[in-house]
Image 1 (cartoon, rainbow, N blue to C red):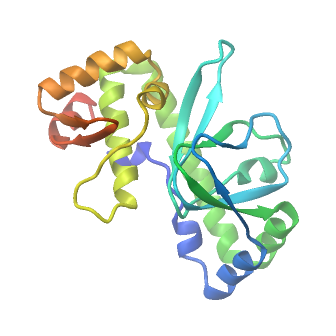
Image 2 (image 1 turned 45 degrees about the vertical axis):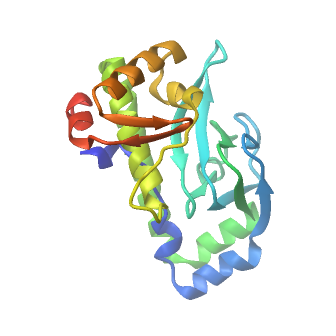
Length: 226
């Protein structure tokens, strides 16, 4: 059930032929990003797409009161920023690193050229866009219909899955800041702190400084009402 709330497009690159992968690698322009550095901002005109080689990136929108609502967390191996180019529109959201990251940009013309040449990539991209829309619809339903406690549990389960994908360790540590977690849940920092305290008291999570580990996935799944 958790899968319908998780967007991931690592398969876009992994399932390409070697020839298609080489086409991308030839045009990738690699750049190192600091933590909390913006890649692109809402309303700007796109001039390319991006491939996250290392690190994590958040995708979010800002409301009229200046509050962030985090939509996705991208993992290494994922493409992002292509929706605006395909719709011939400006970026509809902002992306920013949440840890030190290595990101490859692919110029717009090169991206469109590869799209024309690779039927496999075209089909995979269509699949990714469909999945992204489905996850967006599911998350909007969660934000409007579930309690804050349920949303916190669900967000922790989503993050556990995302951090687990690129973890070589049996233990999965979530390192997202409390502010970003609150923005993902759609609640105030103080409310989030109280719920995390309750989860810790109930032995559902363990917190070590800024790191968090989920210790009772089954109970959190019940709380999330999945």
